[in-house]
Image 1 (cartoon, one colour):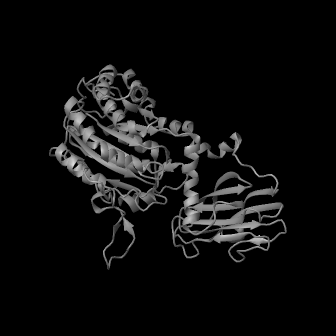
Image 2: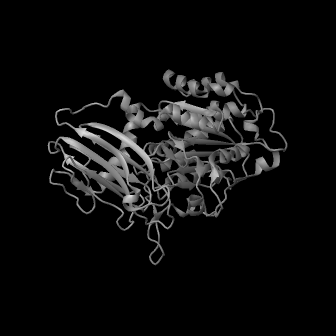
Image 3: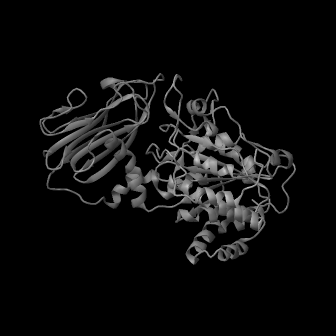
Length: 486
């Protein structure tokens, strides 16, 4: 795959209307099929597939399409003509073949991975327009980047097989990856039946045998990141008809499978709110109770007191695994968001490590005292620790453990993504240096702010050895040409 010519005229025509290119909302199975659930577009379904590239320069752009980064795909679509036009005009790389991928979260999303063929013509527009931008994610600070790495580590690259010259792989996202590629999702998503899960570090090593791997990281403020994290719980509660805002006390529980977890809250008068007693005499209400029949992989439970109704005193919050609905009995990861008087805290854990159910599985999440006169309007700095797994330092440290630190390209404005991709291609390929690329940016009338941002992101690539060896992964084949740099 990957032949043809990208016509700028055809691209402009496709973008000349006000119609949204991203109208795809999941391929619905035909009537009579075993399942009627929505799935990825058949052209992008990785199940049982292996992609192949015969172009001189294979390029993969893997875009996070979860809630926090869904707009990046639309930006990529709008700027694709410029991206390809600059490659051709400046000769940054020879004969590129591009494969676009969309990454979600295999633990909860219906479309955790979508992969396009390697193309060089206007079929690339069609690949992007077939993306299902599900905007899901599990609210855990991790997405399934490692699943995409596993899939592309097996890509057939003609140039690599014949010369050992690597392609280029760009992850674009803002979260961490799971520590291993779960065998469950290898079977469900990729159609591979393996005996054991695969450590993600091993997968990234394999990927780097075929590609120079980068992580493009659009940074966010703490407030923006907190909003994205909280949005997952908020959206689940409100989608189920529960009350999220305007409360004195609220406990929201989420997990990511069909098992039936339950919230229990003990009130100051020792009244227990749970599935068999949803409303208490003191105004508390379990207004969302899910997975009684194992109906969803994105469940939520919600207990709340409207503002002005909660009574003072001591409360206790308990999580219980009432029953398994999944075939496999085992530990279940959960997250609880607890709001008391405007102060929000998060608790994460794993219930039923040995398959316990009912009261034997009970976990005490927190015991707190409620005072109606002590409302907090802002979250203190100390409470930001509850979001530590989403902190820049934590995320970047994890990525730096599997790819070279200089290959982590940090930007502030997502509109700089294309400029950063072009600069990384040009510098690592050796067709220009940083000064030359800055001159190219100026010729495109980029602002000084954009130029400074791009320079900071890709400047570290100039400090690397020519024909470097990423974690010792270059295969024992003919070496790349001297103009190729790592």
